[in-house]
Length: 342
Image (cartoon, rainbow, N blue to C red; front, side, top):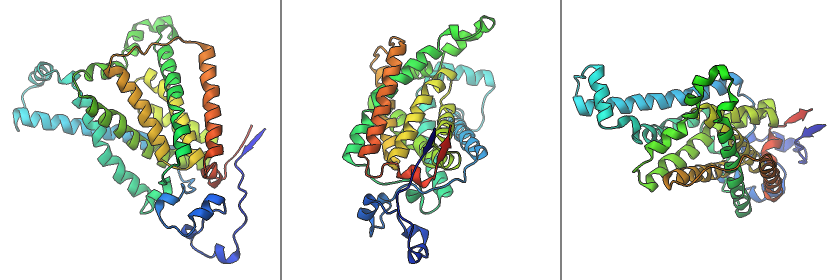
């Protein structure tokens, strides 16, 4: 079986081929409507196959390192405000941290996440150049695209939660590693639940739902995902991008639960060619998670194979419908000239 993104556009005339690449658009109905408009919002992601596995890994490691550096800087500022330039011994600092419950404070999570906005935006601008909006796809999605994309939020959240529950089961680990089971079950989400106590809901929405959605989509869809698909094809490139996306989400259960989310976000991006739909779906998925934690909602659900299969089938139907209803359907994939054989 051969899966290939086909391009039905005609070959450009000689005079069109002589024009700069940025002035040429594919011959499609949507492109004809956009012709004559130079605004970045009317342009789709540009083909780029320059991303290697090494660069994708460096972006992923750099993302984690930047968060660690921001955390260290924030902690240093707190120490300076508490002790000045003369810091006490380590045991005194430890007692101070425990006395103010800084180890359970939301600030240790929220501040680095918000700070990543000031790191990622310049980094993406530097990597993509002056035409970064044209490169990653900055157009405003249509109403149909938005509605269909939002219809994927609950199913992908349920799949992620199902994977998360299964991944926390100690039965997944060999009996010889039984002492590690409790450590694995104590995940990053458990820490978040403890740190969310007493934090205003609006602060959680901005710092833990909106900011990560914008930052992570720019990196893992707009920069990494687009290039990996252009270089390795839709299937392999999507899996690679989703793996990089999952790798920055803390513990193993949390990372495994994030993997299907990353796959769906990448496919939404490919089907529509706009970065804003993955950002919207990502934001809504984060919003569901923090709302469940903040309002102490029961997140346990039955682990049923039939439920999982039903959700996957529903998501496939939504993605197919999204491609059918999108005025730019499949164009991002066609620009990548992807051909996958199996």
